[in-house]
Amino acid sequence: MNPDLPQAARDQQQGIVAPDDIQALCESILQQAQQVGGGKVADYIPALACVEPEQCALTLATLDGKLYQAGAAQQAFSIQSVSKLYGLMLAMQRVGDELWQRVQMEPSGQPFNSIVQLEWEKGIPRNPMINAGAILVSDVLVSHYSASKNAVLSLVRQLAGSDDIFADADVHQSELNHGSRNAALAYLMKSFGNLHSDVGEVLDHYFWQCALSMSCEQLARSFAFLANRGICPFSGNSIASHRDTQRINALLSTSGMYDQSGQFAFEVGIPAKSGVGGGIVAIVPDFGVLAAWSPPLNNYGNSTRGMYMIRELANRLGLSVY
Ligand SMILES: NC(=O)CC[C@H](N)C(=O)O
Image (cartoon, rainbow, N blue to C red; front, side):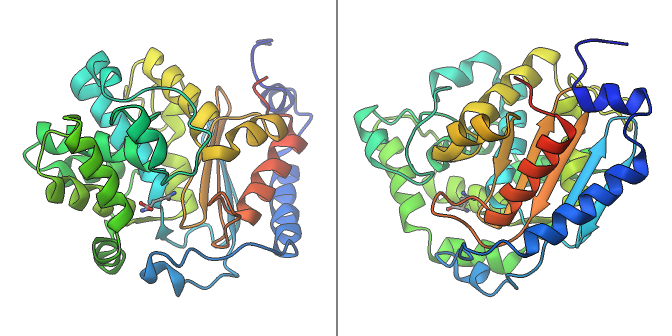
């Protein structure tokens, strides 16, 4: 028995937690989450405002190929900032350590779309998990790929093992029409010389990747390599180096839940990324991936019920990495 494995993985191997128990746990947590009130669906992107707020889903994909699901786990939704992870992976592969001269790896302690810090810090975003950082990463992709959207889409489809993944054209257009704050972030970075490509093209890429629609099941499968030292456990393909997966998980731990990352680390203790579509993915190294979805958001832009579900499942299974 490997003492480094998370408690849940050890329990699973020893037969202490039966698969049926985990399935029942997921279902009961989803039911409890449905009683949790509060939160508001993101409406600053008009196309997201009309999403049915009561939809709810929870998935746990373990590295041994088991899938535990509850609620609308196969229903696609707007992944929004969860897409920042795919963009980051591609950019890290493409430009290597050079990337960290243009974006930092520090928590921002500010809202995900904050602009003030970016001016103080001369157009260098605090991390790639906030909007400014992801727009910078989009600039890297647009500058280095002749078809940057195709590069992201084929990566996402390969990782999720599904060709049935698209960007939602209405959400994409809606953000293009109402993206003044993101445009301000991009122009500010351009004014400091930290954005190289055409701002319009960069924003178009950024909004497009935010508009990708995926289900909890697809999200959980697609990030399994992050829990498996860079190797996709389903195909055996090497997706990223072990060092890069450690770095991405570190960024998720410190910045993935924006200015609520500290609280999330304190209460849950696993690397995670959220998006304003109401999705959250959480990585448990050497065990698996949790994905939750519920549209209403708290004041930080994190899904209220999604956080509840991930916290409960992680605590009940003893998944904290600390
Ligand atoms: N936190 C998020 O999911 C933000 C993404 C959203 N597309 C935006 O730029 O505002």
